[in-house]
Image (cartoon, rainbow, N blue to C red):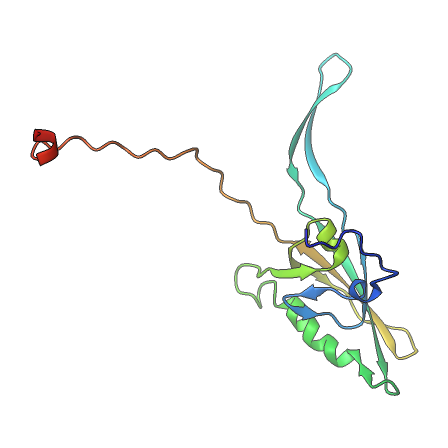
Length: 173
């Protein structure tokens, strides 16, 4: 973990207002939901008895929704809509057909995502922009964690012993 534990939104609110995706800071203010960390268990009920055996089989691939609240304020010279177009294109570039045949995961960072181990994501769903009638809008984006399986270790590799070469001067000695 990157030392974010113990940071309070009351003291460090600005870092809770955005996500960093592929090194780019998201526009507007973000609210996260569904970024729970869920585990997989194989539960086998005991036949004719009370109870069950439970075996942990790994961590589930997670997903979460990031709801972005973006504004345009000409007095403060803030136009997050212009920034949104580039950010939306970045999100969409993670999935085929824009990314090719395979998804292209981007590094993601937010204190709450970091706390639950989310490191790389791809876009799962881009919501429609909902305007609030006051110069702002909301867009919900679902992200899927990118967590490809790692090849299982085949054990320790042992070098095969070479047969002795009868012509080797060390063998002859």
